[in-house]
Length: 434
Image (cartoon, rainbow, N blue to C red; front, top):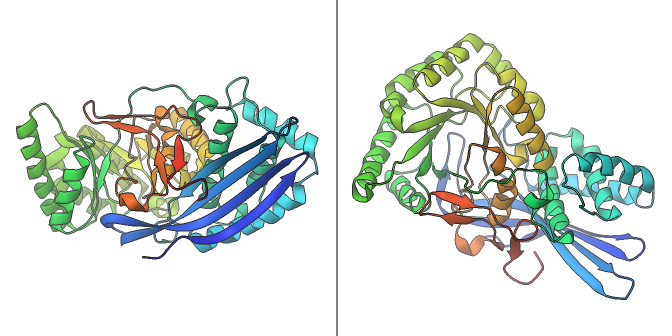
């Protein structure tokens, strides 16, 4: 398997005595088994990782070094859906570096004034950020490459590292830094992807060691869907009979594999309704682009009614990629799955949550396949949600993870507990270099 690859690196100096080094690396993550969806199947993921290291010298000569970590999950590119790869993010970061260079020592007062106001809306009281941090956020928000479709995934990994660093500067966890409500117990799903039977059973066995909530990937194939759900249902019944006090709940992810709502209706009736008492929600059966949904909008409204009539919910994932994309979907969905790579980072994730709730939609916090760094970035938003799927790092072989720490699984109570450690709660396994 390929090794880590350095893609971008630069040091920025801020007066009086602060230096910030930003490093971008492509790191291969070996998966425990193949991960298949209606779109692709992979055994290795090549995610983008960012480390922002700040070194400051205090008046007494003492040097302080802190670093923040960020990650973006990068599935194989798919038009209109998965929009970035490592080359795209490398290009974005080069533009980000150039833009940041042009800003240093310019417009200091205005940048700090503007961002102090903006950040007061999301930061708790008495949070202090050095002016260099404001510059890094400003460059991120006004980078010339924000016009490209790969910008959101690029912005996400930088912003994750910035928030991790901000937490460490203030000796607080990122959740304690932000105006996000506290939530003690968070339920999260584990994903069984499209794979040969023995691999799906192995995935289910692993997932049930952590949680009774299982997400199942399917496609439009009716016979395959019937076979898969029967196979997994029989295995779930074995667990429930053996352990007696558990109730295994599913969600079904169709990954935008239907263009015709009539065919989707047939699929739901023939494949899914037999298991409706197990199923919390069905995710993204419809096309990704609203222009394609709109052609059959009445049909998709009918699908929502069918799903909700059977005490399930219908969520959008790929279609609800940005703040602007949520409202047009409101008549055909019950909720939205918010992912950091889609929306462009934690701040935009909060805005998407606020928008969805204003439309009486439920919130799900999802993730791409990734390491514990990415999972703990997404975990920051989970107190805003009903459910989540933060299993992406469990799909990755332990030796592939560059970081350690973060939230913990409470298997007995079927929940996760968010980390109270500073920043994202993650440290690097080997020293302090990514």
